[in-house]
Image (tube, rainbow, N blue to C red; front, side, top):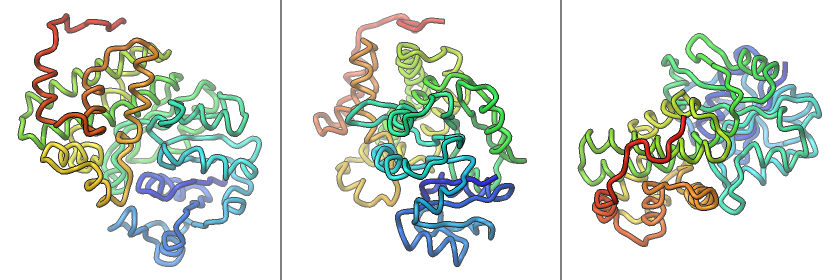
Length: 335
């Protein structure tokens, strides 16, 4: 089986490395220096430094050659560049290939999920498209730490096939038919992680972090259900699991952005020093638009949006959130 992985960031490189151990796997990258490093030195010092990549893993910047005869195409491109890469790939994607999105975000201009973009650009059956989502920090997965993730797809047979492809001794893969829920979970948790990072930057403790994660899960679930997701999805790996890892880990880029904001740094300054993308920054406007369209209450995400726009200081949002009207804990949550 031939696999094409489009995108050579830390997560794309990690997955391509795992897949190459059992399949003929080629990565597509924009950066010539990344292609050269993978092909000749078996490393990706730009996006995944410190790891030796499998000798079998190949890389190239010619989309047509990378996609030729691929049975599985994995899209591992940041959300705000996702559409342009799918459009670039469109003439060369094999008609019967399984399609897998591993990107967690919402397109800012259209508020579309990544599977919606794939379906629209490639004009394909939505059941051809799978989503991989879960608490999967790339460096930990690459190091072989026991991890778990979810493959979501409306086609059970395809989900099982992709599940077997991604399963390894250290990465346990579950299936779930709820594509919408898994994608919304993956996108919204990045926004909540920025809030959790702000709390860290402001010097607050674990009571605050636990409250943010729990109330963030409530917001995530409210939006997910309103958009058609299954409630139980948000208690699973693509919901609660991913939220915990992204809000708590020092490796989380979104939490890191929030921490720096909490310490008083400007967003533009923070982003200018980052090699990789913090998806929550670009996805927050789309998440808030989806919430407004669905009449869903998301106060944490709303305040994150205000901070990212520069309309309010992180310290101010704590008082605003604590002063909100008292409500039932289960307000607007439905089984």
